[in-house]
Image 1 (tube, rainbow, N blue to C red):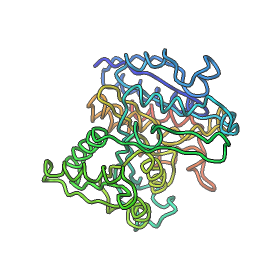
Image 2: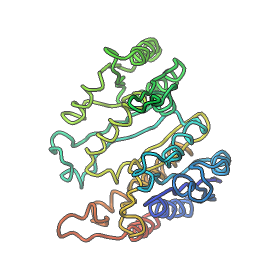
Image 3: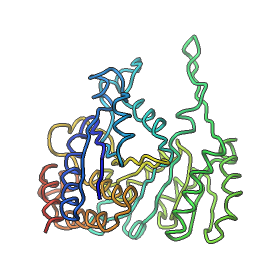
Image 4: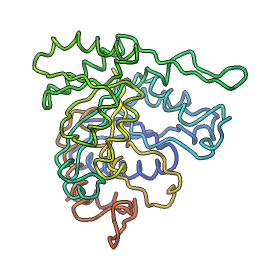
Length: 356
């Protein structure tokens, strides 16, 4: 198979971890006989420094002509520490999602047998956790208008807006995911308070009869925030709006023991983008110490969701699991007395495993 992959390394540790994923993707291509080409483009703070905007038109064109996008991270302290900055790296991420139509963020949460005791939660609560969030990405309070501040600067406002079609397309994807898993779908909202949440609940209730094999539960977001920690194995597929999903998926990442382990996909009608859930971690940039496994696992999701190549995806996941079992990990997972490998060394080891 021929594959054209856009690479958006971004900021901070993004280029380093994307480099390791590229090594792994090339190894998969060699092993399974695929022809893979890469095209790199700027985004985030790197793009602002180069051309003044966080998501240039040239980058958008690269993404449009690719079969999949592999993305690193966005963010830079220079902008985080300047509240008055008019242009920010994160604006590039929101614009990219909007322009590419990436309306569904797929965030799996699962445990690794060799790392289950590294989680801050008790083994009996999390062992065997296997859930997935589908977060709506292009609506809600992050995009709602109007927004702004009063002329006096002492009042600010944001608007949360959802249309039925935005909810319906995400909900249908949630039902389809549930049909392929344990047939349990949880709609997460705040319907006792918010009008947009009531629209979410009404829309899902209307669609539910079309999927009679799926059990649907409705829970308020604050209840889910508690139950995720108390008993995450109670969940299978969860669907929710943009802001709630942003918060809950980061909370869920703690279950695995490290944000450096969790991959994600952002899906649209045409373009599909794959990225680790962690940020740009600028303190580690250029030091060859960042954990690349989430980005590598995002590449595994790419083979599964963008190219329907499950064997290739499984080969990557198996190599990652072996690296964890054998302690071929970066400093965040090495622990006291354990050997910490460099980012690039972990990538090289994974390639050898795949090719062996």
